[in-house]
Image (cartoon, one colour):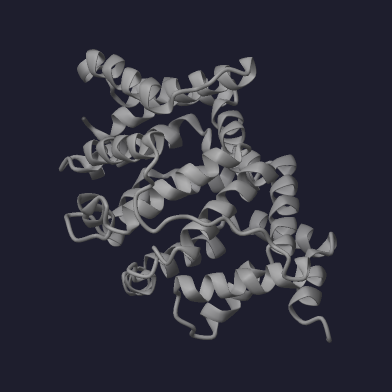
Length: 328
């Protein structure tokens, strides 16, 4: 199965999930997605770029992606289950999955970054978010509030600028310090097992997750499929609107944050050398070239300046400075 198959599978699954949530009925993730895979496979070669574009437009028009993500992440059981699945994968329960994402195969950061750049998605998304006044002001407000609420992000950027290694320990040290300063240390902790859960449903979900991801990523056409998806996202221009909706959803941001915290607390991230990927991205000059292109582009840079100005006028920089240096 090509990686592009995941798009129709995901859209069909999200539709079923949203319908089940609205009706208050139980949603069987494994059964539904397995059924969707069979349906999509029957379509065979019909899964092309135009098909992906149609499905993305449908998902965006009906707000399926954000609504289904909120419905899923608003359920603490789902958050714990997904956290456990990720932990099992990272702890080596699924060795092939680790090899795929660790870059030991044909995939690497530089290749993926080149595919992203070639798709034109960054330019199209930046244009939609920056050029239109309403979108730019909305983006500036959401980004500013996010940086104020999640003060560990500005602290992380400053630390990296000062030469600190990018590691999960460093990231979560900043996250926990930020949480402690706002909750007085009374944060809720979810305890996960470091190996596969023994419950029948969790074991079934874990096996299903591995089988699905293995099929999606084991093909030599993985990068070509990713390219098709990115081009479809670029052509439909749905990405910026999804980004704005996600940034505006406290349910999604909170759910994702809790999943990451759950996974980190088990120690499952210790074997991932995050800094090596960061160093590779810097050595390839992809990050610096992209940043330079955005900051000096005659089309986008003036609007980017307006976005920064909006954040300054609305007082976000002042709030960030106060939270980072409360004594100043």
